[in-house]
Image 1 (tube, rainbow, N blue to C red):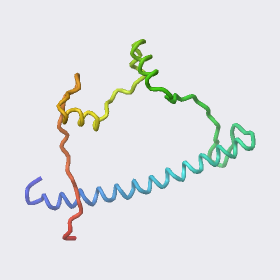
Image 2 (cartoon, rainbow, N blue to C red; image 1 turned 60 degrees about the vertical axis):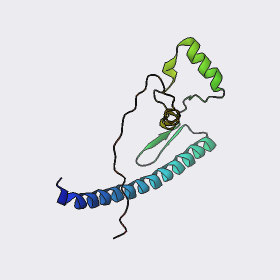
Image 3 (cartoon, one colour; image 1 turned 135 degrees about the horizontal axis):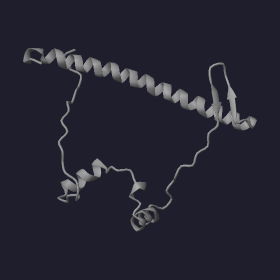
Amino acid sequence: MKLNELGTGIDALYSLREARLELERKVKEMKSEEYTLRNDILLTLGECGLAKASGGLATASVRVTEIPVVEDWDLVYNYIAENDRFDLMQKRISTVAWRDLKESGELVPGTVAVEDCDISLTKSSRS
């Protein structure tokens, strides 16, 4: 991009981002409607004692799976350390906590700082 095209590029980026954000707002509304319908269907199936039901386009079946809920993190951490089961953890650390430690002078072993360069885009007051 040439310098004389910079303003046009910035405006194009802003317009594109605004269009994307509007679509994301619509998607969020649709997800909310999906969530409500899903819960209504599950409730109705349960009340009727049904494991599945069909409409003209699709069939909804109740699927039950187990998921973990941690009640005592100390016990979990001890188990992971004692049994070398670090596969139970997701492999990422908190950026906010890492930055706090770095700013206080403490470096977390095994990590390095990498700069992430982005653009801060705000609406111009001239429009």
